[in-house]
Image 1 (cartoon, one colour):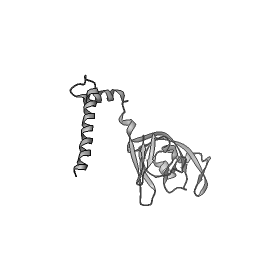
Image 2 (cartoon, one colour):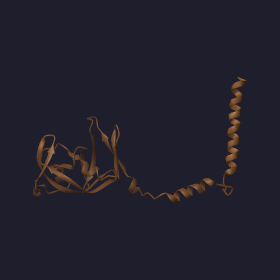
Image 3 (tube, rainbow, N blue to C red):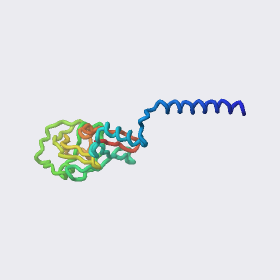
Image 4 (tube, one colour):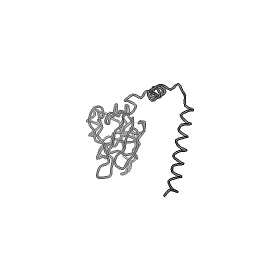
Length: 175
């Protein structure tokens, strides 16, 4: 037991001497509260971040294995299936009407490839999509006739974000 105690005491003594030597090399002009001075210096060097720069939202994974969210599209709630394989936001005709798009006057002059094949769609711009405070303006979208059961939140929205991360339970988006 004594043999094991001596190396431990020697190590402790060496560490104590090292701390004393380190203390003696420190700046003697330190103020009584150096932590406050260090915090002030650190704050002066960091850029100011506004609340707008750090907004996040969670697009939850449902029991069906898909990620869903309800967004305010032009101030109207719309339920979206998140589809990272969709190049654009795709609105059902019903949802497009609800957000104020006159679907009768849209020109269906764009071919869109879907899982069911090629369909004709109308290109439009959505003024604003908001999910839990995360806002994206002027989002490219297509309006589908009756080929969609739900509107799709595609890459024309996701690519406009600061970033997004996929977890096992949600997609976290960052504005």
